[in-house]
Amino acid sequence: MSLAVNWRVHACQPAWFWLTVLDTLSYTAIRQNQLRHIRICDVNLEERWLDLIIAGAKNHRELRIPIITELFPRLEILVTRSLEAGAEPEDQLFNVNRFDVGRRAKQQGAMTDMGIYPIRAFFRRLSKECRFVVSPHRFRHTVATNLMKSPDRNIHAVKRLLGHSSLRSTLEYIDEDVESLREIMEQEFKR
Image 1 (tube, one colour):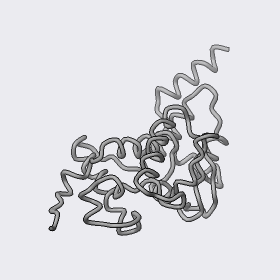
Image 2 (tube, one colour; image 1 turned 90 degrees about the vertical axis):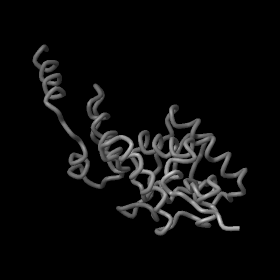
Image 3 (cartoon, rainbow, N blue to C red; image 1 turned 60 degrees about the vertical axis):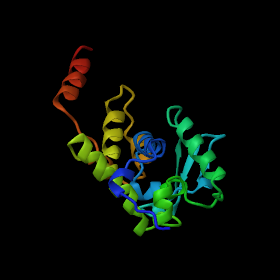
């Protein structure tokens, strides 16, 4: 029996998985390729950190990043459901094929270069539904910009989180707007 799969319908399913993807990108500022290379064993829920391995790194360096409170429940569910579905610790964590019957029938195994299609399809569908382009990389820019807007601005912490080797690269991710500049200047000249 052959299953007909409508990729348009399945692009946003299962919703809990894709919300975990979005939250992970939102709260970690990692790249899409880093997300794809996270294995179950790279997630330490007890100490609340993620190891980003060399395989997914643009700069060929490993990086350990924190799991913040808002992200923790989603990652805990993803790890638990992955293990319940028969995944091994060395298996890819963000593998939607494990949780969607239609995708599982169409494509077995890890989301390799061919398997990146579900991620791209999800962001295409999300962009269409939102009526503006939503990309995984935009989350990096947003996190960097928001961190630099905080009163405790720390360019070195942002640089480390993004995994950059130079401040110049980090500065390219930070969008300054006139309102933010005005607030900084107002605070400075009130002294």
